[in-house]
Image (cartoon, rainbow, N blue to C red):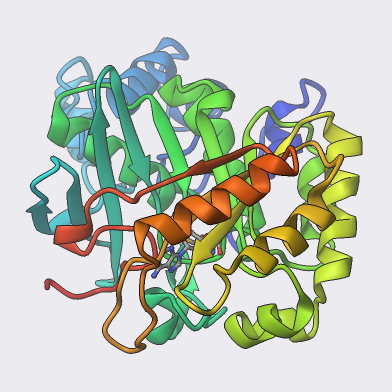
Length: 356
Ligand code: SAH
């Protein structure tokens, strides 16, 4: 178990600050202040340390020039928690895919997606993924471990530094299933918000749905957007695509999503990958609409991005449009999201640890 404080502990003014165990990335000003004082330094150095970690994006305590020389030498080996860029590739649309090497040598993938007056980072939450969805490259490689809070925040700082531009949006849609790593995801959300300075509304967490976890997530009353990967309008089809659907049926998932809307008062997004001839027929759209009628939600259609291991196809444009039309006729809010970064294998579902 790590000593990462949960979000409620971080937020609650009455809670005691837990002892901070490095890496330091992810710690709040008050935690860093307590930490510098434990090291025999004056309290104001906590604010300085915070500024150098999150805003000057220093990679080693030895480089914090406002600190006394002797103390810098003493703490030089205490890790901040930054990764190194192992590989970087830019797609023609400007999307940049990074493979980042972590302290234990593991590699994770991060994507930087620039747009006019926006810079979005797609972060991973696990090394690999245990969910094994049939159409997703990440699941084909198996699962290694959860990422720590600092390893999630680091991805955002790395893209910010590389683009020399502030990150405006973060989507938890990289490798891994965020709701299998709830504490570190919540810790990262708190820190991205309070330390890095990104508004909660600019954050989106995407989940395939883990029993009870959507309700638990709702109870934190965050302003982040929750996206749920539905991908099929009925249980039979969903089970074919998503192995975990067998033990967590569609009806139960939708019921928990309804609870989410009631608890948070927020609308949620349903993601639906369009696979030609599999789940993209007009009758699928009708069936989906029946489930979602009156549901405070929005459907995000993601035309399939090809991966090596399976031979699904992306539907032709008119098929996609026909699916959209059915949903719209049924008064379901819908957008089509063509993924960016396809040519760099950086698009949704294409994330794996290779340099292709
Ligand atoms: N584990 C999370 C995040 C996954 S990635 C989740 O399941 O939601 C974000 C989205 O990309 C998910 O909706 C995922 O199902 C989708 N996706 C996976 N493989 C894809 C592919 N090959 N083409 C298009 N979208 C894909």
